[in-house]
Amino acid sequence: MPYECIIMCYEYEFIESYRDDIHRKCDRHFFLKNTVIGQKTVIGQKTVIGQNTVIGRKTVIGQKTVIGQKTVIGQKTVIGQKTVIGRKTVIGQKTVIGRKTVIGQKPVIGQNTVIGRKTVIGRKTVIGQNTVIGRKTVIGQKPVIGQNTVIGQKPVIGQKPVIGQNIDDLS
Picture 1 (cartoon, rainbow, N blue to C red):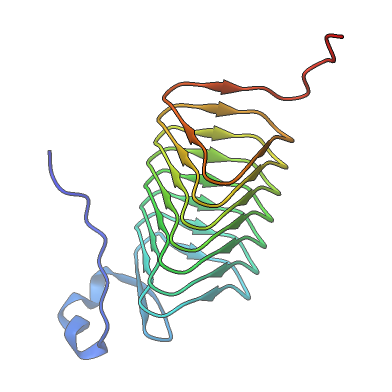
Picture 2 (picture 1 turned 180 degrees about the vertical axis):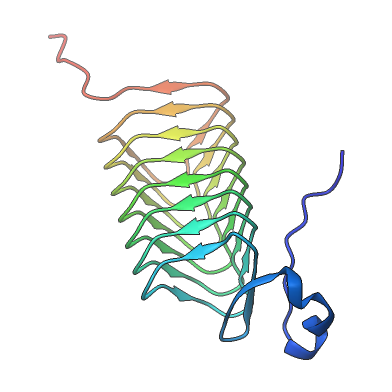
């Protein structure tokens, strides 16, 4: 299987020969073609943005962060520094993702969600809107976490769990 390639260049002189591949230049950041960055978005230094990615307006992305290709990030979202977001990720608007967090491939994260720092989220995760996930949480592959859910700090959640939403009182 070929390696996924995300190109990052620090010096403009280095990329002169790759000029045709560059779609957009912002400060000292270079993005591959078909990457769209919304107005008033702030991107930290040494951040890598993959090809065919869409980032909504007024979003803040910390330095040394990696965002995989074909990712969609909603407007007014904040992503902390040194975070890695896998390819084909969908992140809803007004979501906050803490620093040094790792998110696998193909997750869907609902709007108004908060994910604490140093959290690991497995691939194909579905997180409902208005959800809070505490810092240093580890979530396995393919879980479904319902909307309006709160997960405390430092839990480990295995593969394919379903964590409910709006459960009726059974008493």
